[in-house]
Amino acid sequence: MIKDYLLYFSNDVYKDSLYIHLKRDYQIKDETRFFHDVEVLYKQKEPIVYMIHHLSRYTKIWGNGYIYLPNHFLIELINSILINEGLEPLMEKENSGFIIGEIKEKTPYLHGYYYAIDIKDKIVHSYSNEELDIKTKVVVIQEGTSLDEKRYFLNYELEGQLIDAYIVNEKDLSISENDKIITIDNNRDTGEDFFWTEVK
Image (cartoon, rainbow, N blue to C red; front, side, top):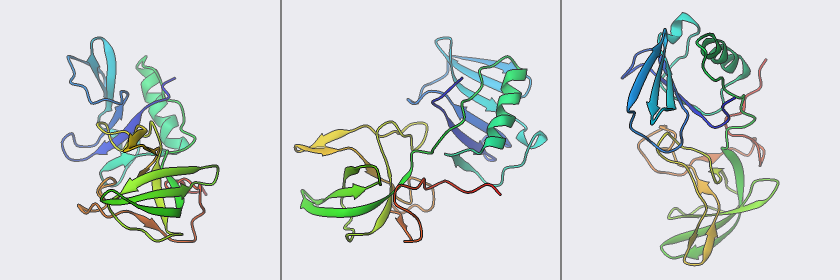
């Protein structure tokens, strides 16, 4: 089963289509094959994108955008379509990788601030030009988590300081064109998955 993937639903370029990005780095296809409603894009014989067209034949998704934490029912539906076409199915995600953290320390650094952020099971560190107050809750991603099919976070050092988290802003999630950091109400718990919702 495929563990590393990212879903994107489109009603724009390809109307009523669900993209399943299988490779983290953006790659240009060199081959395309069709399996009824599923189009598969390949690079050097390796599948890089599944595209399920005419998704409304199976289910309805409102709006465009990334689905970072697909629920059990959507994954079951996707897998039934893929398996029916002889394609490798997806593993269900345990979390989205977008974690609610609380600012514990801030230090002026270079042209911004170096933050220590509590994500419940550990403290991570990030850098931002935007000043945040202590105890502010933010959304962070860690190494390996994708923002989109072209961008994912890797740890790095900035002038000798470890940066092992990235603070997510509104533009990252297409909330607005503003790169203002997303702040979270105190009724959400530190360490909680930002995209988690309880299934009734």
